[in-house]
Image (tube, rainbow, N blue to C red; front, side, top):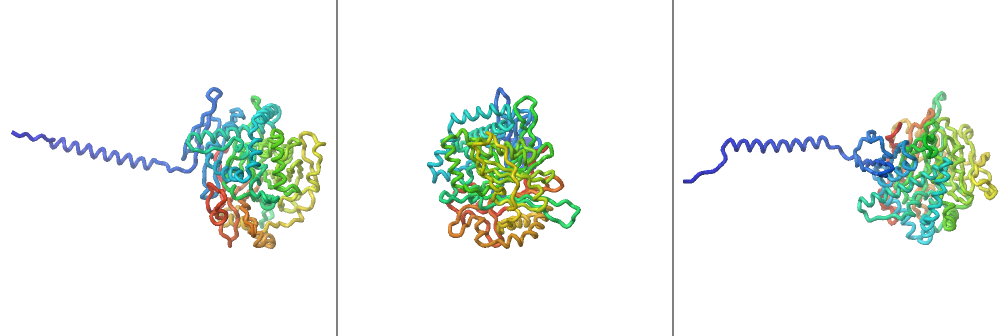
Amino acid sequence: MLKVVGASWLQTRISTYILVAVILLGLGAIIIGEFGRVENDGTYTAILSWNPIVGYQIDFLGQSNNLSNLPKDIAAKAYYRTKIHKIGWSFVEIETTPSYPDSVQAYAAGFLEGSLTWQLIHHHWSNTINAACLLQEETCKIIRKAFSNDVALKKFRNKIDTLGSKDSYWHMISLFYAQLNGLEDGWRYTVMKSRKNVNIAHSDFIWLALAGDMFNFGTNDTSSRDFTADIGGILIKYLSHDNPDVEPALAIFHHTAAPYNKMLRLLKRYKFGYHVNDDYGAERVPTNSIAMSSYPGALSSQDEYYIISSKKNQDLIVTGRPLRTSNMKKQVDNEIINTLNKNYESHIIMSPARIMAANWLSLDGNDWSKLLARRDDTDISRPIQWAIIRVIDSSIWLVEQHSRTTHISDYTKILNDKKIIYLDGFSRFKKPDNIDISKQSKFKTPELIEPTDELNKKPIKKTKILVNRLKEIAENNNDDTTLKIKQFNKINDTKLNNNSSRHNNFKFRGEFNDVPLPFGVIDTKITIINNAEIKTFTAICGPSKTNEEEPFTWSKTFPKLSHIGHPDKFDFPSVSPKWVWFD
C-alpha cells in the first residue's frame, strides 16, 4: 500500500506567510536604509589626539561629518574639501586646542594637513620640484644636500628651541618647523596606509615649505628676468558711491603671478591656540587665526596674501608682491643657492618662517615689519613689497623687504588723500638697499624713510588684466560686493584700457609673442573692508581672459608641461570660502 507523504494545508500556508514576512522585512530594511543614507559631501575630516604616554593618534572620520560637533578634548581637528575641477580651489581648515603644549599643536596641525592633502602634495611636488630637477640636476643636488645636512639641522633646531624659551619670535620660528615635521610625518603615514608606491625626499619637504624664497626656480633658466616681478600687483582703493554721508568701502585687490604649473591651489585657515612661550599659563599670541591662499606642502601663503584675525579687534590684511630690484630673478636665486652651498645653517630661517612668526605676533604694520626685519646679516631673502592694512581704521603701512634690508613707511595719509595705491614692484624709497649691513646690529629694525612721489605719478598701467578679472567676478555674482566692483570698473575701465594692447594682454596670460612661456597671473583675491570690518573675501583661480579669448586650456597651450592633477580648462567662477570653526 502506497502512503503519500506531504505537507498539510495548514503547514503550507504558514510557510507562505513566513516567506512573505521575510520579503517584507527585507524590503523595509532597504527602504529605511535608503532614507537614512547620507550622500558623501566631499569633505574629509580627521582628528588627532595626544597624551605624553601614548603619543599621537589620528582618526580619519571620512566624509559627511557634522563639523560643529566633533570631539572637544583633542589636540587638533581638520577637514579637507577638494573642488579643484569645479572651482579651481581646494580648502583646508585646521583648529588646535590651546590647552595642549604649543609644540604638540604645531606638530598635530602639520600631521593632519600632510595626511589629508597627501595626494595634492605629491602632485604639486611632481609638477614643480621634481619636474625642474630633471633639467637642473646639479643645482638640485646643492639644494637637497643643504636641506639634508643632519648636523646643521640638529644644531639649528637646538638653537631655535633654546632661543624660543626666552623670545616669542624664536618660539614661533620653532613652531613653524615643528609643524613642518608633522606635515612630512603625516604625509608618510597616510602614503604607507594607502599602500601607494610614491616617495618624496625629506629635503624636498623643506623645499616645498620654503619655496617662497626661490619662487622662480626652474621656470626659465635661460633668462635673467623675474616674470613674477614683471606682472601681478596690489591695488588698494576706496570704492566711491553717491552718498557722501556713508563711509566708502576699501577694496584690496591682489594678483598672483606664477608659473602655470603651480595652479594646484589651496585656500586654507589656521586657527591655532599658540602662546607667546612655553611657560605654564603663558599669554596667548595676539592672532587668533590666519586665512590665506596657498599651495600644497606650503605652511605660508607663498602668494603672500593673508587675512589675520586678532582677539583684540586688530585684524590685519597682509599682502605682498615681488620687488623689482637690480638683482633680478637669476641673481637672487643664485645668491640663495650659493649661500645654501656654503653655510646652510645661517640661511635656514628663510622668509616663510619669519613671515608666519610676524603674522602670529603682530597687531599693526609697524610691529609686523620689525619682526620681519629680524634676520642675520648673512640671510638673503626674496625681495618683496608689502602692504599691511589694519581693518579697524584702514591704516596702511608699506613694507619693502629687500635682500639685505627692510624699510617701512606709514602710507595712511597718501591713501586717504589719493584714494588709491597701486604697488607694481618698483621701490617707493629713494635708496632702498644701500645700508652697509656689516655696520648694523645683528637684528636690524627697519628704517622709516619718507616715500617719494613716484607712486602718485605712476599711472595704473597693467593693461586690461585688472578690469577683465573684476568683470569676470562681477558677471558671476550679484551681491553688494559685486555692485561695488562694478562701480570700480566704471571708474577705471577707460584708464586701464587706454594702456592696453594685444601684446600686453597676451603677456599676462604667459603668451609672450614668439616664445610662449607658461607664466602669468594665476589668481585674483579681493577683500572688501567697510565699517571697520571685513565684509567679503572673494577669490578666483586661473589665468585671466578677455571676452574675446578662450579660457586657459592645458591641452591647447602647454600640453607637455607637467600639470598632474590640474583641470584641463581653467574657466571657474569666483568663490567666497565659508569657514566653520569660529569662537
